[in-house]
Image (cartoon, rainbow, N blue to C red; front, side, top):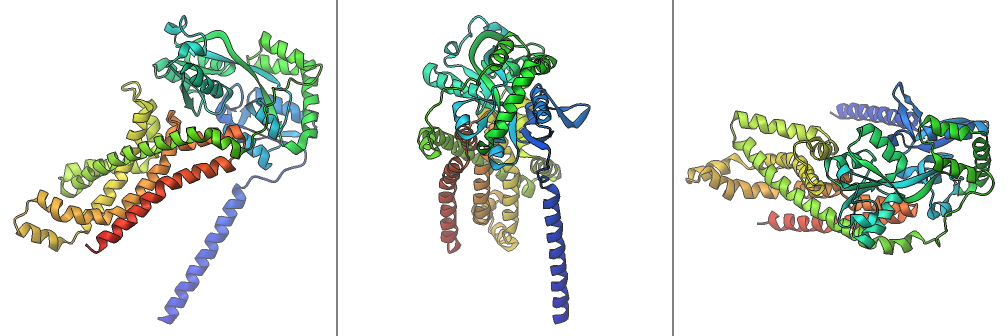
Length: 503
C-alpha cells in the first residue's frame, strides 16, 4: 500500500513539474519580444479601422492606414524600422506610460491633460466634430442646442463625449456612449438615436460604408487635432519626430499620405501650413488636478453607475431564478420532448459567450424588434444565467432523499404538494450557496453590457481613468464599490445557511 502511494505521489509530482514547465514555456512564448535596436515600437488599435489603422484584407497580419504610414515616416526619419503593437484604443496612453511601446498613435486627441503626462508631438492632423442626422432631421438639428432631450451617440472617452456631457448639463442632451464607431451610425439609421457626434473622418467613412441613410451637417461643432504621445522622459525623441514631421510637411509627404486615404481638404492644407514655421499650437492648459481630487468630481457619476449596475443585476437575477426554476422543474418532471428542448436551451446558453448573446439580442434581432439597451442587457444576462441556475436547482431537487418523497406520496400528497412542502424547501437550502455565488458573478458580468451602450460602473470607471490618465485611483474606487455591493450579500447568505442548518 505504501509503495502504491509513493508511486502515485511520484507520478503526481512528475506531472506537476511537466505542467509547470509547459506553463512557463507558454508564458515565455506569448510574451512580447524584447526591444530590438533600430526598431520604433508604436502602439495603435486596428479595431479602429480605416483610415487610421486597419488590417490589410489581402494580408490580415499587415496593418495599413494613414497613421501607419505616418509611423513608418517617423521611423524612416530616425533610421529605424516601424513595428506595430496592437493596443486597445483606451489603453494606448497607459501602454506608453508602462514602456510597452515607444510612441502611441491611432487617432489620439490632443488635450491639455495629455500634455501634463506625456511628451506630445505636433498636431499632425486636424479633425472636426460634426453632427450626423437622418435626412428628415437636416432642417431641425444643426447644433447641440437643437438636440435638447434627444439621444446623441458617440465614442466614450473622446472629445466628442466630453462635449456631449457639457451639452447634457447645458441643454439637456442625452449622451449615448459606444465602444466602437460602427454601431452609432447603424443605430442612427435604425432610429435608436437621434444624432451622432464624431470626427469628420469617422463620419465620412461611415457614410461611404452605409451608402447613405444619414446626412453629415456642414456646421462644425468643434475642432481638435491628432497627436503622437511619447513617455514624458523621452522628449528628445519627440523633438526628433517633430523635426521629421515638419520636413515631411514641407516636402509634401503628409499631403500625399492624406490624399491617398482621401482625407485631404482645404482645412488640412491650412492646418499643415501653420505648422511649418514655428511651435505647434498648445491647447490652453488647465491646472493639473490629482486623480484623488478628480474622484470627488466623478463620484456622482460613479454612484449613478453603481445604482444602475445593481438594478441590472437584481432584475436579471430575479429573471434567472424564475426561469431557471421552471427549467429545472421541467427537466425533473417533464416528458422526454420537454426535457430534450430544455437541455438544448441550457447547452446553447452555457456553450456560447454572454457577450455574443448580448450582441444578438441588441443588434442581431433589431430588424424584428428594437429592444432598448437596458431591456436587452437584463434579458441577455437573465437568459444566460437562467441556464446555470437551472442546473443548480435540478441537482438540488435530485439531492432530496427518495425515501422522503415516497413517504410524502404515501401520506396522500400530490406531486405539487410534495414539491412545495417537502422537496422544494430542502432543495432551496442546498442551492442557496451556489445561488449567492452566481449573483456575485452576475454583478461582475454587468460590465459586459457596456458593449450595447449601457454605461454601468466599469464603463464609467474606464471613462474616468481615460480622462485622468491613470487606472490606480479609478480602479480602487470601482473595486470598492463592487465590494460594497457583493460583500453584504455574501454575509447575509452565510448567516442564512448557518441559521437553516439547525432548523
